[in-house]
Image (cartoon, rainbow, N blue to C red; front, side):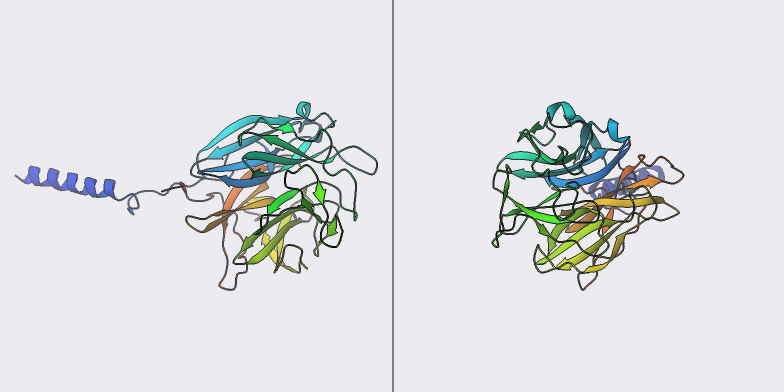
Length: 330
């Protein structure tokens, strides 16, 4: 009788655990950092439907950055690699690297903006745009030439980020060499349209800006973010500003993301994901593993990004654990 009672109790407890996926007796599943294998940098994260996507630069010597891969996940933990979604063979005007992708869906198509070649005055290169029918490509060059080739306001045409405003307008922030411009895209992404004052390129450079701009809106406020320091060194980091509109002025608030000498160095060139079901924000970025001396050896990581009661971004703690699994639609 005692044995039967023990067995009954055992199965009763087992049934309770199986019906309660949030039981304290069950281990939480975390993504770990880096979130996938390989040398990848400049990651852009985006949510397409019920799937998370990350589009990074293949992080190698400049002359070897001739293609891009992307990664998809249903839960931020298990990632599927999609290889060679675009390469220099698909972009006839390139003669060297592709890097710093920015992606967005528009009218049922998927667009990938990229930097190509090392553009100085008079050279062909700069910011291009490619299009595909599905998020994993393959992507084909849309224009057969750069969307932006020239250097305006001292901003090297690299590190573009495409932002959809609340009214449906699409703006692109971009720039290296410590300067940042914003332009307005036409509805089919084949060209630029002037602002109301007739300007095509509007400078929005905040203090300490180096490269890697990013923009998002939260509670009616525009959060403009960028990378500071040198991308090859441990001082690489992310700072931000807050404005009432997408054009600023952007007065620097402070640092959001930086190295932790006990975890990794060179944390920067990020993007931000808002998962609306849980109202959770994530920052996806690259960093250099401890002890790594090759400047091109960078890995893609993810950590939570949180806010205080006034809407300021709390400093992000970079981790080895990453973030808890967050399946969509559950």
